[in-house]
Length: 217
Image (cartoon, rainbow, N blue to C red; front, side, top):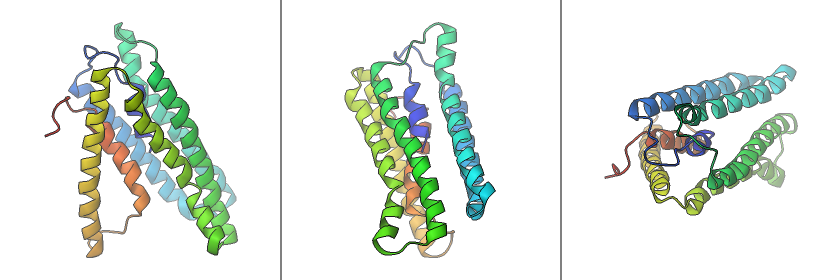
């Protein structure tokens, strides 16, 4: 979920500011490792959400991994600036950050609150619907921020890079979800919830930014 932020906040302002495919592959791998560790930690903590330490550890883990993702996401820009061709975040990305970050923090808060409330109160009917939908609302605002970025980007090269990564991510997510869906239908793999589609798309977008522009064929 946080991979879309990291891949857009740190994009180079000019085509000449490339860091090389090897750098981007290593960076995307680091992002994937942090994301995998994040999901693994939440998986381990989920059975303990009804305990006091679980309710403390889960938000702490979310905050820690969010800060780690943001830190890793800023590495490309720091490297560019150290080499002398970086610059401050441009206005489209500032607007993106102002939209995306509050949405993601709201998502974390609402998700933790919804899980805790559902375990204690076991709501039914309309209340259960509201509790279940609450964490999805900020994700919708985050998705809005992602797709407003290329619309507001006035650099044609940058816009093309963004749309290229979106195309790769969308195609890869469709293929993965279709394949996993059939495997799940025949009981060949454990069941995956539908909400995994957005984090999956974000991870694929991160890898898509490692690919040269113009290779969507």
